[in-house]
Amino acid sequence: MSSFESFLNNQLFAGGSGDKVIARQEARADLETLRDVIRDRHSYVAAVAYPYDHAIAAMSARLPEQVSVRNLALQIQKLVQHLGDSHAQVVDWMQELPGGHSPFAIGVENNQAFAYHPQTRRLLDAEHPFVRSIDGLPFFQWLDKAGDITSGPYASRSQRLARGLRLLRHVGYMRRELGLADAKDIAVELCDAANRSVRMVSVPLLETQDASGPLLPLPDESGVRTGNIGYLRIYSQNDSALAARIDALMAPLRETDALIIDARQCGGGTRECLSALFPYFMTTEDGPYIHNVARLRAPADTPAQTLIDQLKVDDKAMFFRADPSVPADEKRALEAFLAGFHPQWQVPEEGFTDWYYGVLRALPGKLHYDRPVYLLMDWGVGSAGDIFVSTFKGWRNVTLVGSASNGRSGNSIPFLLPNSDIRVRLSTMASFQKTGEMYDGFGIAPDLFMEARMSDWLGETDTILDRVMAMALRAA
Image (cartoon, rainbow, N blue to C red):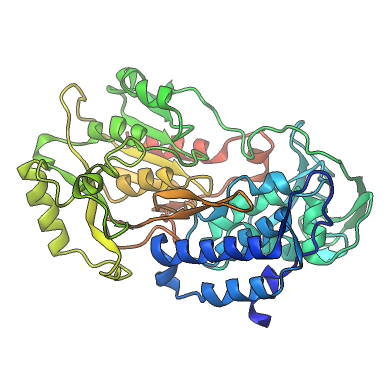
């Protein structure tokens, strides 16, 4: 049972007016529901062989007579991070966290963390920007714990960083998880770049988190830049209006000498931007381009037509191998692709469907752009963003620049635990890049590595864009 101690803390909350309490048997029934969902519907647990049933049994055995739903939700949140599924989480779980928030945020430069005010974009201490410890505990222990809770041991470094940075502001909760005492102030140990000069700072704790902007301030506007270099900003994968404007945004960029597609911090969402943009880089000679394949975890009695239609939606735009309406050229392209396809993980035959595939092709009206393309990416790219950058990776004239993406793709859906009303989001699709590599746990590596500098986080510069602009000018 000691292997599951991190799930067994039932005392994070002592109830209260904002909490719901259910009986032990009701909580056990919900845990049994969760176990059955993981066993019958989850797509990635077999890839990591995690003993989820033993973990759930250990949780169930330790439940008190009256169970706090908030405590149970946080236990489940930590449990599902061990399923090899980077979408897995309790829906809205961070809304259940106790008060006590940091007024400063954390940024990262060269593996060193620095503290800044997110509203003013000013350092906590300009002469001592870097964080050595918080409340006497080395900072890396805070970041590791935040990564464990939000992402788990199988997640990519990018995923752990992206989610961990947000959780770190919840100091009241993090203190409980780290075994630290509550206090009205946060004791922050800061140092200079050489780690020689040190300063202790006491920062008052906020009861509620203040509104703040994005972790990295980036431009939103597209257009032609100096030297006839095109700049297309894909700021979100979850904005249908942006996808609908792709043709209008590309119109003035068609005659540029090089193109920068900036997808940094674009997150996840749908594949609409990809479907609208990628055909500009294809010719009719390319034929159908199979860029992503997956197998779905579905009940055995699912009707054939339901399977055909299951992923044929905007957020996935994937088609079923057994669909009789698949065009003949797509069918030939898919079969040729699968004949040489070697997935990183052999998906079990039992419980999974046949293959689904994502496909793109040249489209009328989208004039072929054949000059150098630089795609900017970072740790804020995930899910549909992962699909976006992996589709461009390896394509002619395209160079991926930045840092690795999150690595998650799984057709996640929420499952309701009826007694507690906890909803647990889990992946139901095993998804692969065209190379056979998995998304979850790995992400997409850039062709050329670059990371944001401290001044970029503070909104003073955009050193990555500046460097890539210089590259584009030389290549043009």
